[in-house]
Length: 388
Image (cartoon, rainbow, N blue to C red; front, side, top):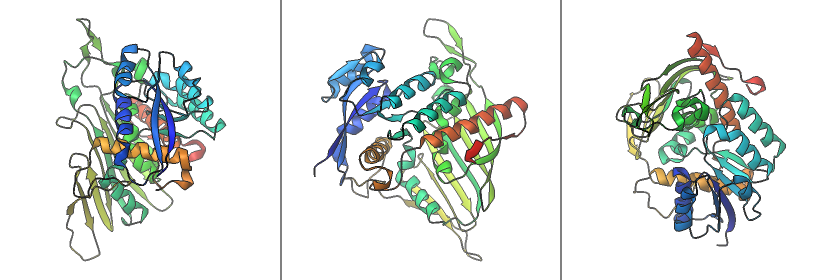
């Protein structure tokens, strides 16, 4: 099958940039796709960071330390950008105005004002495909829940819980990094860095909170600064958001949590939905399993737990009996992004897109209200503007 090659540049050559390179290298894992990414240029302010790509990615032809030089490279059609939040506004806008397609890391701006500037650039350049990184909804169990929601299986929603939990910050000797500083991460703290992962599916389902009561926690107050001293941790470690969701047909509570300190949870993403006709849950803690409780009036209330087959949005060479993992979800996310670049949203092989910039913008509105709730100690109304 002839494939359309999408030539990529990577800005920010850290962990997730390497994951993209690995996904591109194993593109043969996918079946029936007529598109393929090829990383041809990389950029990082630290030349040592680009060295890994030059040594391990044969398609890389050029390495830059100035991202504007990469954007001027006519061979680059699309960009993956993973930089600290304070750099999102300037770099994302420059990428979009250069006419390059963008898959960027969340939260698309350090705060609401920065996000609004990015969104304005997106509206001014409708020919550019802009999406946010969010891979967990591509796990087979999550895709099953997406299908059930789209089919209306749950009946009236009783309540929803979704979260993304880490645990490495439980170690007080872990050195400080940019995510613990307001100047580089933003006041949202863990919400800005982890929150769109949690909100991707609820927002995709149309479940926008009308109000929020936030419980924000700073647990580790200082960390080693790498110079023999200690530095203050300025950002929130954990966040619990109790939300009131109102849709055209119903109202229900939704509890969202982003935690950097959740003992025993190295990287746990989950969603639980309770409804009058079905309840279901999926967590990456048990990535092979999806649980459901179908219910008819007068019938038994029994949970069914089954192994989800290896089946995501795009076909693969892997048999259905095998296990799906994090790197597989990354591959699926990149397939969705490249599919949309090549075929357009309406021409994609399947309908589940990467996280939309509008969904990232919605997360900013919720997190801004959450900060207000924490300051006042009360419930804050979420200002959805004209998008409510």
